[in-house]
View 1 (cartoon, rainbow, N blue to C red):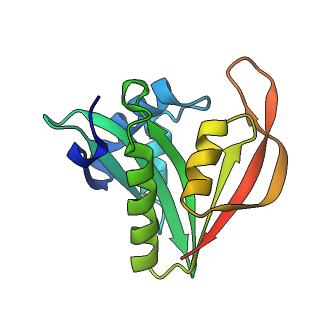
View 2: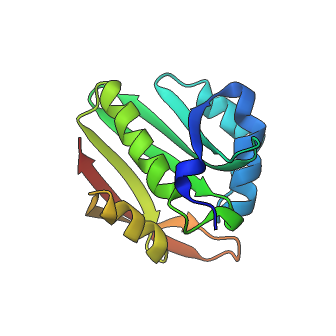
Length: 154
């Protein structure tokens, strides 16, 4: 098992849009196509971080945006073979620090109500549920699931 401490976190932007899209395709119920990732990276205040294994293989990413004094984690995916090794925790910590450095005093996110691993990750990072978006996520099998809105002060 690879320890997360061997992972490097680096900036991700337009040049990494295809890598982020591929990770999203294989690790998310709502994959982001390359064009969507590129469009997101082109928006004001949007940025990404990529977790990279020794040898340069991508292990996960987080994409977020900052507006005024609030940040939002738009997506976080850890590659299937890299899960449960602390990589998600490292990505969340790095995103919180980047958001703080960008002037945010709070970070928001949505997580699918049927994603206990994601909820546990965010709760362990200090996020608390503050609301619900009914039928927010459309899953690959066609049904909809609520999104829990979570917030953490930084």
